[in-house]
Image (cartoon, rainbow, N blue to C red; front, side, top):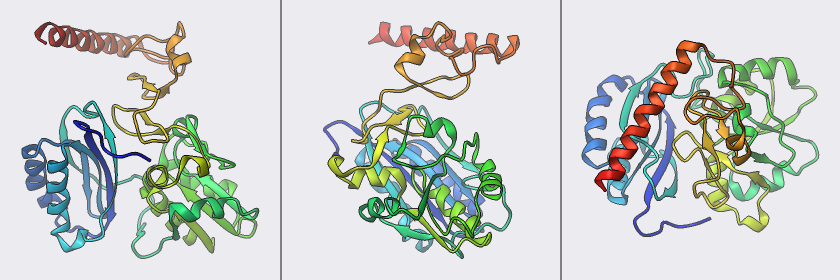
Length: 305
């Protein structure tokens, strides 16, 4: 747990499931407001709600949150804050989508049916109960760098694969108490909806996700192990919600440890031990050119500073 230091940017992860019949009309004023207030990041709008991560100064963040909460549909908007010394995004985008988090199951409505929310302070007690199955609903590359003690991974590459994992590996007669978690809570809302429709009766999820847990629970009491993957240039955050130790492979998007970056198979911007030899010659050429442009831009910035 930590607070904002002087000159740090605030990073806000937020989401809200609510019917937005006018989501297409919402895009232009929302985009303009974010740009006018020096914010960067991505906000997704869909008929089912809003999901986004944005970064900027305190005043700009507060202006955006006030703007959203002035709409009665967002009065209970959920968000988590963390901090960074460097901008984690390069631009501001408001995008229109079919789903704000893609599971690919029609008629999923967490607002109508959802598992029981468990706050961060109660979470430790729940997942240590012997009859509780704890599931990390995130993808395998996220789980690999950090998760809760005794949690199982569905081994998915994308969230679209999660329903198949449930159908193949879980049984409502055998797994009577299921507790799930994800980065910020949004995937779990859809995941619990799916489980309950399949007949699972006692379904719980970590309210606010891993980020809220790290913000709330003292390190001495924490059952979290490792770092938490985030979808921005920080790549991961540590137990203090500060930028972690991982970099990212821009060829396959996997998080890279220091050992990965020391590998002879690692070429910045082009390949890593996870994807070396898997890209076509055309893609490799494009990745090399992209990295060349990035290096040139950095040299210009260094020369001008």
